[in-house]
Length: 379
Ligand SMILES: *Cc1c(COP(=O)(O)O)cnc(C)c1O
Image 1 (cartoon, protein in one colour):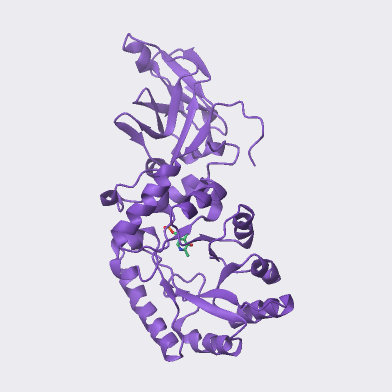
Image 2 (cartoon, protein in one colour):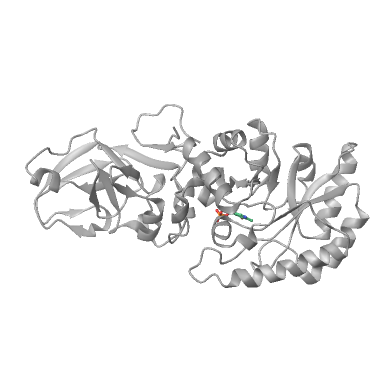
């Protein structure tokens, strides 16, 4: 959790208007009004409680989290809309999920039995709402089509205690350059829906599409879309370019110190970089604990006055060393302590996105966003 006293000038700004803009852009693009906004992992580092309150007011249908405890936190934040638990309920926590009206995904008969037992124990009348998860090729959560008959039988015997509101699946390759596997998964999903229908189960909500599938595959949008990343204004490989999404998070700091170092000096841990000229470097209090991955060493850049400057040597836990020699060399206005440094965000025509950081670090934007630690105050 963030400290209560905040001295360091490193902050993550969450642009709530961008969240609303992105929600509406996705609704327009897909023609779907119902959006299950994915706010797992603290809304990809954007602060789940705050994001959910804002999107609830902007017309989101409901929220998806990974964990029961994330769902409970939304209820504690006053969120009254549906909350789907994408990771299901760990055995023993069915009562907790039920009293908070969380809607777990389900893919095994034992899960149905445990949820039904929790409902009976409660003495309450309303059934446990669930979404049935079909594994169409992701091989994570979900029932294979062949396993459906047993599952549907179990649901029939608990009718009244457990109510299927939705049937869903999840794509493995929707954001890959070659996402032809999505079509294969869609065919398997159609077969599963057919099996459900034949057994008399016609869910009120069918959903499958994460951000990339919602943007690229109209036929995957069904009754509701289930975006996470795109809501935060980020996509991979330019998938969302046509939508005009706006990044919801910017990460900024300020120069904490300026040093002059002679040519030939090695910089930072492991002495990976040696200065080839007399240099002016800025110490900036942001490091891999704040979301700039150590693996971006050698590639990372930051913006100062709307210009790109390279990070020298290894990215450390709390601090980067930025080469600002060119500000001096241009004869004008040398870098000053207190000047703003943009790690993620836009200044004038220049922009650094979490996509850029992910590329530098050889990872995906999701991981970059999740690694902006809670010690960075969200403003
Ligand atoms: C995380 C997740 C999503 C959202 O994916 P994005 O790529 O962030 O849009 C949707 N569905 C499931 C099951 C997920 O786990």
